[in-house]
Image 1 (cartoon, helix red, strand yellow):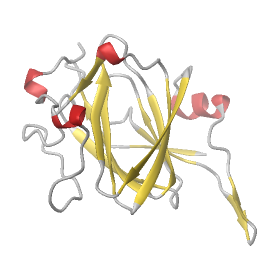
Image 2 (cartoon, one colour):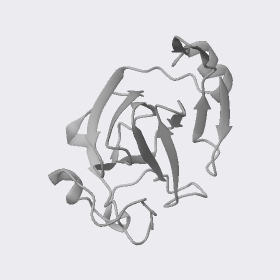
Image 3 (tube, helix red, strand yellow):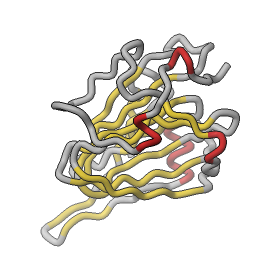
Length: 181
């Protein structure tokens, strides 16, 4: 497995070693020891999530206040444009975003430390996204940043409007959101 820092060095792209032949492929999607060696993070994952979404569905930008989650995200079918926004007020990257193409084909994973908002938009006909979290989902602590907040300026690969849940369509601008110290 290989780890590549993004423009925000704590957010990492992980690429597994894939063994393939005419029968198909095999790769280790998670190994705790290798993850810690590559990232320097002794993450304890407590929950696995799996979603399936249609083309142009945008989920996010989600985070939990006072019980933040680290996430290890991968796509097992289709493709998404995955976005992370730094919500740590003390960070030099506060309010900045990065976007990464994740797909079943490229088999990349994205490590998102606690303190970031996360969202993705499906760029294929449909996509299945799986992610591990370092803390449990707590709906009372969940917050949503507005997906098109002009102060953040995310450049989604989108024509027209995305398909949003009711919760995601009511996200708050970053300036009016709870953030981390």
